[in-house]
Amino acid sequence: MMRGARGQRECESAGVQVSAVNSNTPQGYRETGQLAVASNGTVEAFWTENADATNYPSLPTVVTSKDGGNAFTAPITIAQVTDYPASSTPFDAVDLYNRVPGMSARVDCYPHPTSDPSSTRVYVVWCDYGGGHGVVKGAVSSDGLTWTALGTIASVASRNAFFPAASVAPSGLVSLTFDALTQPLASAPWQTGTQVYGNYYAESTTGGTTFTAPLQVSGASSTPDGSSYNNLREQSLGDYIDLVDGPNSAYLVWTDARNATPCQAVDAYRNAVYASSKTAVAPNPDSACATNFGNTDTMTAVVNY
Image 1 (cartoon, rainbow, N blue to C red):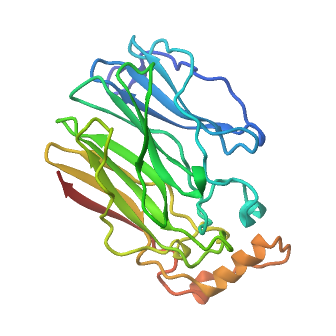
Image 2 (cartoon, one colour; image 1 turned 90 degrees about the vertical axis):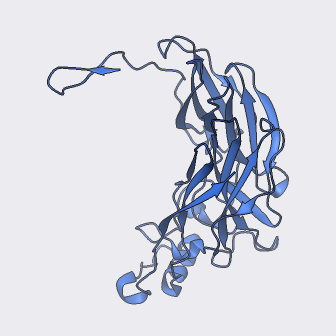
């Protein structure tokens, strides 16, 4: 709680360190902290252990507090994740981020939690690339200490799922959203510029044990090749996706690239960079590309239960 005179606010408690620190390529990082508060006041903080590591698996991790966040448990591992590849891709020449095959935009399979207002349950979802096919997996806990695996809760044939998020309605219905990219040929897994993605929705009325078949809510498909970082070297969708459940409807938001036009000059530059060229020069998109190159938009949708 923040308190202070004349509009000035002061922090009522100091920050609490809930994990150790590491920052190196073999072991990876601790990234993407997110919070959920159960209906009984239990505070649960989540992150990924070994994010972007080359030698260790990604681990969705949680610490819990029963005293309003003053003290937390030791870190608890929820699952072991097979993340999307972070190495042995053409994009190693640029940086070491995880990527969905067929796309150079960075992705994550970090844990994304949500609390159930009708019980003390907290759910957490993430993507998983085990078996060479990207799906959404999840887990649930009633106390933040013991977690029950829900297994694969969403999968789209011939597409790899990424950027999942979840929410719970006042009735206890669990909603799920995620993006999914078409799978490239096995002979050319990192060929960019030909794959498309869409946004999907699924729901569960059984406490997460079963979900409906994913419904594509985005309508039109998007090509990530029309998106870009400012340096033009990679596609960029941003991990900007979420949903919120109301009493009767789920409200979804995602980054959409249906109005973005790919640029041949930028594709040529990217391919040269991925081939470790030291002399490739970035084109000027103002003169070399269509005016809507890079035009990613924020889109929303409503799904009634």
